[in-house]
Image (cartoon, rainbow, N blue to C red; front, side, top):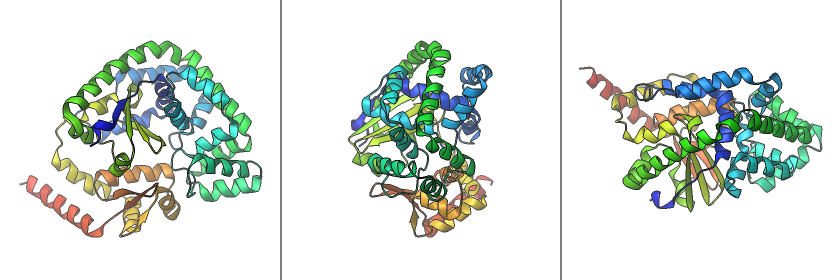
Length: 366
């Protein structure tokens, strides 16, 4: 069903941006290895961990500041260029930087608004976002109102967004300065090694998908909303060492969905799951008052992540973490409503899952 749509992508432009994410969000990426499902299977890549440590020591203060502004673990404004790489089939960081220089600064800000959970607007297509950016960058009052009321970032990241939108030309200048400095002083020395490593892993991934088909693809656990993939004509898959056990994805248009997989994620389908751990996931998901609030809000109704974040007053980054735990425990479901991703929860199904999980755990203890 899915495999026939798969094509493999190989672009250092993705690694270029993801390595910046890894530098600034290393602890968050490493924390996924502590998940009980993975803790006995995988360990963080020691080479990457050492690279983060040593590179971090060499970053000047102004670069560190820009790194956190554009590659913050909540907003990821800097990776908004994934869609540009995908659309134009850019192959390396140099091509990406050339393209960013061509992009008008307000158009660049439109891309920034599409990252994370973005603004609370019905039409997230770039032409509509461009109109919004034009409006709010021309009127400080409109900007303050939009960022305060229509975005679901934490206060610190709302302030960051305010700074970016207050001076679009400076935002673009700072973003390019960060990328060009990083390319010259860090990434250029890594390009050959990263490319060779990716080539090996991509061949392994292609072999696994070819030999094992849809079963392997589904066990990669990268598809949270299968009906999205039934509607696209192309599923593009690449790899990056910087993601470890995680993955990144982008849907630049309605025809193409992109996944970049960490090396360790390629091995997930070959690991036998401990069913007892799935039961424990259920009770872990229920152990948080925020996740219980999410379940109460979703009973027999549905919300987009943006609307849910606004209703529950949970910042988008925190909400995303809670949603992932609830999805893993199978307590919520996701679906497409037109072009919008929504979540819902069925109280009867939740009760059934909880009862079955408790029964299985008690039986395992006998």
